[in-house]
Amino acid sequence: MAIIPMPAFAEQQPGQFTLPAQVVVTYDDEELANTADLLIKQLCSRLNLTAEAQPCAQPNHQSTTGPATIVLGLHPEGLASLEDLSNLDEAYDLTITPEGISIAAIHAHGVFNGVQSLLQLLPATPAGDSVTLDCLKIIDSPRFGWRGGMLDVGRHFFALPFIFKFLDLLAFYKFNIFHWHLTEDQGWRMEVKSHPKLTEMGAWRRTGETESYGGFYTQAEMKEVVAYAAERFIEVVPEVELPGHCGAALACYPHLSCSGEVAEVPRQWGVHEDVYCAGKEETFQFLETVLNETMAMFPCQYIHIGGDECPKVRWQSCPCCQKRIQDLGLEDEYELQSWFVSRINKFLKAAGKKLIGWDEILEGGLAEGATVMSWRGITGGVRAARAGHPVIMTPTSHCYFDYRQSLRADEPGAWYAMLPLEVVYSFDPVPPEPVDCATPMSHSSMDSSASDLNLNLNAASTGSLAGDWALEASHSDNILGGQANVWTEYISDQATVEYMTLPRLAAMAEALWSPKDMRDWEDFQARLRVHLRHYDAMGLTYRPLG
Ligand code: TNX
Image (cartoon, rainbow, N blue to C red; front, side, top):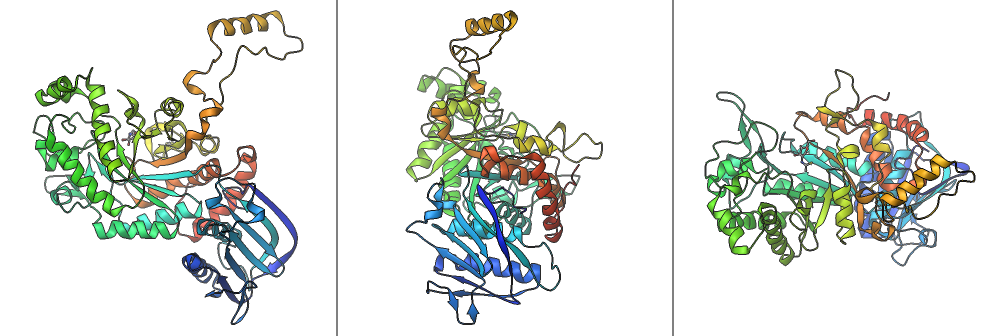
């Protein structure tokens, strides 16, 4: 049963079911029509079967052409088998008996998840004349509600068909968030009708005397992406970087910087000192116009505003910024950044949206209700969760898919760090609970050195040893989940994105979906070997195991 992520409950049952030559998929609610259609397409294209979908109101799912093979059923009133699960929106019951296959759920998203599990049970390519499946029962729902994948299209641009392919991959592993990093120093990728220069000029950077590199998505294309993702129950979270990482925008509109002098779209990676001027009102007029167009395209309740890596050096010497600090009675430039983000937060909130930012938004004070993406380790996330803010854990140590996968000299990826598959697999978005040193250790024969150590530990702490590396259980509900990030400074083509993503995305999927106590590295690798055949069939590039 090579399903990844491992279902919460799965049990092999006696008997087998052979798919007939003519597969009939029935569904009892219009909301399932699209999922039925996606399933049919897979059966036809992948396994050369003949398959059709039929809406069917009858409880026994008798179709007009004979008994249904695969029954998709929606039960908004609830399902006894799913009663004990959490995250019921995504829960499903997949049953295979000698008579047929049934996928039942309370919400359409659950049925979609069940279909993904079924597709993983089917052979990757046509296997002989017929397809036979072992009977089984799966009852499943995710551990975390936020299971994200981020793609940086700013450093390198990836055309629309690849975005669809990336979404297919996220869906295959039951991810439900696509975080789209759309603006960067090295390129602005999102059409903004009120500011056409952003893509006419900001989407392109000079690569030689006359050559330039870049690309962008039109608003119509971005809406297509949102619709394609929605069909796969994935929400698209757009990221518009502020107040830093905005070199491309400043090249188009230099008056929005402190100096007014940003010459071209930056060609170097890294952290750039030119950022939006926090003192000028024009900055906020610009950003609000851009965000209004962004919100009109992306129905998701979240807007990611970046917030990371914003040097303060320009603000320190800018009369407008210094006046702002004085007028508002702020302590320093960190508080100025906090004020900047809070102002944007209020704007988004008034439009009914929620702000997400990288963990730097904690500096100088966190905006009301803001969600924090903790990337510089987990400590920012721990502090935000303790303060009652929602948190997505995405520490570099486990979630940065731009890092190379081994030390081999020919391994692609960023040269400065490594993230092997096994480390991704060990990721847990919820930090351990603090160790209470006041509680004596239960050693039956504690020797004197151990007891000295214990005394010292007690003396050095007031109850908690773990500080910001641990989180009290009472706050752990604030951890929404985790996310894999594909930054693309060192990834310039689609095949390399795939190579960096696979198979690590599979490990991340299991870390974010499956019950923690089911994590089994050996078993995961065995299932992964089967998945490599799926990658081959889908035409995906991946890093071989080992
Ligand atoms: C840090 S993660 C960044 C990105 C880089 C990445 C490279 C974050 C919020 N900022 O701009 O691409 O490191 O690993």
